[in-house]
Length: 493
Image (cartoon, rainbow, N blue to C red; front, side, top):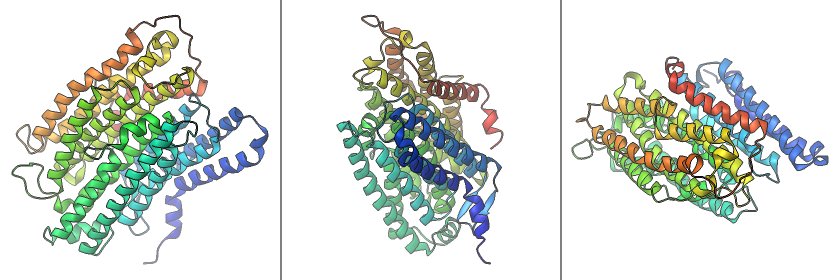
C-alpha cells in the first residue's frame, strides 16, 4: 500500500498553521514592524501567535481521526484531547506574556513558543520511536531557548545552561534506550514492539534499554532523583517560559510516556509491588513516584522563593502523575489513562495561572517577584490577582470543589483499582494522600503572604493589561468549572 501523503498533510494542518504563524511573526517583525515601538511590536507578534494557535485548535477539533500514514501518527481520542490541551495552555501562556516584563525580541519569543507547541502536538500523536524522539527534542530545544531568553538576567542564562546540560544528557539516554529497544525487537513502531516483546524474555539488553528510557523521562518530567534542574530553571526563566515548561510540556510528555510504556513496552511491565513483584519497569516507576512525592513536598517546606516553591511542587505533582501512569494498567484497553490526562491538564491550568500572576507582580515590583514576601499586600494592590491566585493555589493543593481535587481523586481511585490499599500500588496511594496534607501547609504560606499579611506601608495598585487580565480570568474560570462539573471533560473522553 502506497503512503497517503494527502492524508498526512491533512493530519498536520495544526502544525502547518503554527509554522506559518511563526514565519509571519518573524517576517513582519523584521520588515514592517521595525518602524514601531517595542510595545507595539510585541502586541503584533502576540496577536499573530494567538491567531495561529486558534487556527490550529480549530483544525484539531474538526480534523480527521484514526491512524495516519501507516501508523506513524495516531489521532485517537487521547491524541486529539492532548493536542487541544497543549494548544490551549500555549494560548494562555501567550496571553500572559503581555503582563510580564518587556522582552527585546518579541517575535522570536512568540515563534519559539509556537515551535515548542509543534513538538507538543506531535508528541501527543506519535506512534513510532523516531517520531517521538524528534518531537520531544523539538520541544526541548525550544524550551532551552525560552528559559534563557531574558538576556538581562544572569539567572536566566544560568537556568538555560543547566536545563540544556541536563536535557542533553537525558536525550542521549533516551536515544540509547530507543536504539536498544530497536535492536531487541527490530522495529520502531509501538504496535510491533509490543508484539515482539510478548514472545521474548526480559533479557539484560532489554533491561538496560528500559532503564535508559526511565532515566530519560525522569529528567524530562522533573521526577526524583533527576529533578536537580527544575528549581533553578523555574527561578531563572521568564515567567511565561516557566509556565510553558511546567504545563504543556508536562501534559504532552506524560501522554507520550504512558503510550510508550503501556502500548509499546507493556509486556515488560512486571508488578508495582517493589518487594515481591515481578521484574519490569513498574517497580522502578513506583520507586521514582514515591521518591518524587517525598522529595518534592519536603523540599518545598524549606523554600522562601515562590518560584522554587512552585518547582518543588511540580516535582511532587510529577510523582502523583507517575502513580496515575502505574494505574493505567488497571483498565481494559488502557482507558485508565484519562485520570492522568485530566490531572495533568488541570495542573497545567493552575500552574500557568500562578506563573501569569508572578509575571504581573514581577513587572510591577522594582525588585521583581522572587521571594514569598514579594506577594505581601496583593489583596490591596489587585483584588483580581489575589482572588485568582487563591483559586490556582487551592487547586494545586487539591481543595474541593476545584479541578485539582478531582484530578487527584481520579488518579488515586484508579490506583486503588489495582487491588485496594493492600494492592501493589496501595502504599503509593497512601503516601500520595499523606503528602497532599503536607503540601497544604506550604501552599497556604503563599496565600498567607498574598491575602493575610498586611503591607508595612501604603502600596500602589497593580495595572494589569486587559489581555492578561482576561487570560487569568479564563484560566481561573476553567478550574472552577472543571471542578464543579468534571464530567464536562471526562464524559467525552
